[in-house]
Image (cartoon, rainbow, N blue to C red; front, side, top):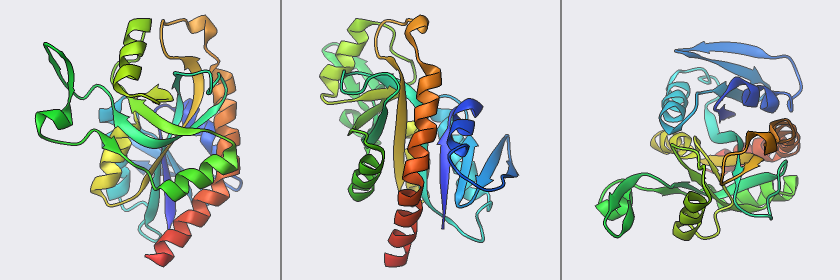
Length: 237
């Protein structure tokens, strides 16, 4: 069994692949390219939930892992953090992958898609896997919100936290990756390195380099867990 890691952009993909040893093989997909090292296939699928879902679905259906099917999908990259518990350059493991702005506006506020009577707005990664990856990397575990528009004001940040108490971070791809993985019957995990605070947009305060370094470090530490869990779960299944 193999692990598929989906990032938004090539710089995140490269930060992940740097964590793995061995020679790199490249596998062409429609509109994308898998970077393969060992048991890991890493794909830069594009920004936002739609691109992430499409790229993940293509990869899962492509036959690229026909000799050893995917047993786990990981959404990975950098993102914004809500709390001082997750400072810039630190890591977060999602125990919930939440679609924070999928729904409808109403007179009394936002209605999630589930309140409208269809769809879902949350995926829960395997709790045992979350605990093991969090322990291996020293990262806190908590909900990560998927948004289509990055938060740029204190008011919006406050509204998101009010709607999703305990959320640790926001990013743009996790829910799309999870939707595709779920339809293929493959478990999903989300790992985020913190590049900025959620709120007023201040590019000068971002620490993208630190976040990318944290992503590499995290996958270096988590790789044995992901491989071991992947094999164990499928052997047990």
